[in-house]
Length: 161
Image (cartoon, rainbow, N blue to C red):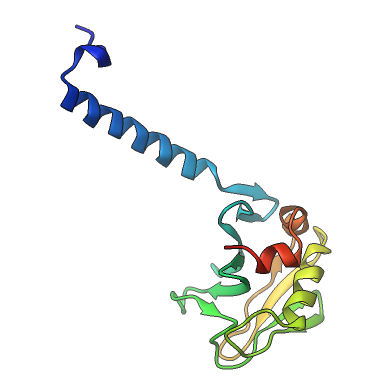
């Protein structure tokens, strides 16, 4: 026996329609994440890029709330460590070049812009490393990062909702 949506009672049609919409939205949200080399995430409405290294650490760059954010999670620190609230300023090493962030709640400074621009210039052979107190990460590959960031400039980032 086959049921067609128009043959069902109005309340049941509404429930089934709602379930179909929910599945459609869920499927769309899982498809929204993209992969660029060793980096994954989205540069659309929710700009958030992440990469993992062999030690189980995750380095994240995000644009939201009018700021560029840098976050790190490790097996020891399950809650995000953020450049805005760590014990000391965070330095991101690209290969062996240092890009230090300011220790403030606002990531609009020149240091953040310089770091953002340097991240866009990385190549597949470059490495990244988070350095701060209490943690220095293992190395992350920059493979795919420049490609992921290609369509965004720093002004777009700090104007991101």
